Length: 133
Image (cartoon, rainbow, N blue to C red; front, side, top):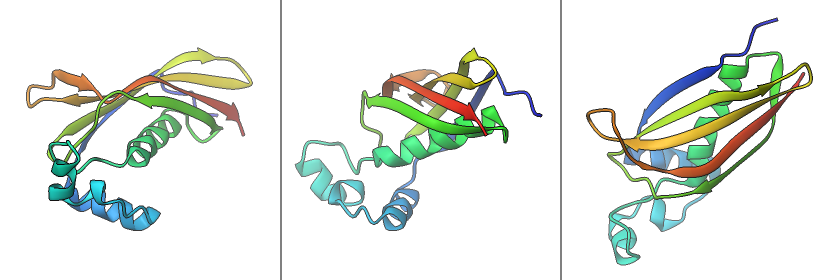
């Protein structure tokens, strides 16, 4: 049995190419995810990262932290700010509860600057619960 990690962090460079690839994989062709002119007309500074892509990054990270003996049972979060191409998103998970039957993690996703400092949170109230396989 592998012991779950207490904390794990991963940075993701947001690119329009990755956003379009994710849209294709999920069949989510809303123009806000790839059309800069449409996004600006809607009041955004540019195309908006699909929230499911952010969720997928967090799900993969929390599963990596927990290890193969655990499976993700539920995850919850609220969007706090949009994310755009050129942003760097720092995803982090921190164990907040560990017993024989379940693990709980607090999740964060923050847009960071070139200096690594948080510019703004992309999510709020994020958490995950994993159960033993």
